[in-house]
Image (cartoon, rainbow, N blue to C red; front, side, top):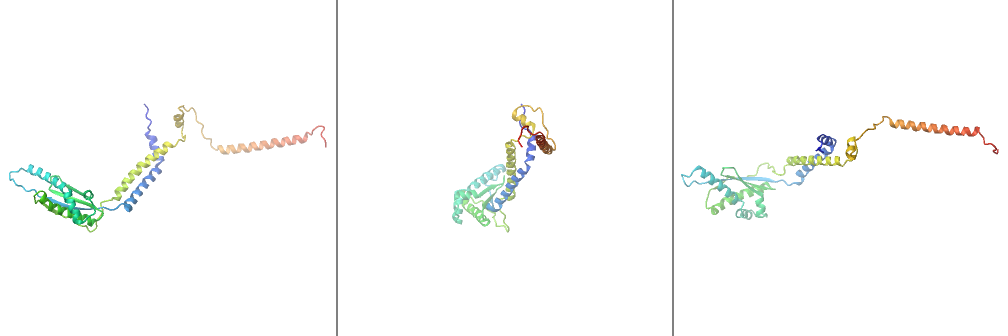
Length: 262
């Protein structure tokens, strides 16, 4: 079965509509840049590191058991930090307007593999406010864990600080413009293909064969200077017509009617 998709014709169509593709791509890049720089609110991030000390109570405890116990403990603490018991106290202490679920969305807790360090990251529209929430959450967690787990093995390793020249982590204008370029190129290509498919102008004999289903037997080529030839022919025809009219007049004068009155 013959394939209806011709790669060569597809590339020729794209090359023919290349200005359209470039215009759409540049339009989306410019639109992404304008939205990123003027409409999107900058988001700052503050991070605090928390050290979890696992005390060894049995001298015969193997290293493998210690690693497994530490991983489980870090995962448990990871959940406790974002629990309502901690976040509700942070909201009350800082007199925040957010709910527990809203504050939970702005906080991310992660840990490295086989490490006893938790990294608490807070995103907010204000750098100072993000630092305050991060440090307060770490402090509340350190205090509450003593009663929740009946242990005292949490220390704040590196509190969050306000940098001299804070840079927002969101939005990333260059990244957004790159995404805009990709989307614009794809839409421009699709639009070019659509325009090419909607164009029903017959441009070559293959188009006639495709529409009629008949084979083309001959082609009438363009005649160079056909307009000049047509104009010259019209002038000659007019001259001949005038000459015939003059001849008819002369013939009428030289042959007067018989029996006519004067």
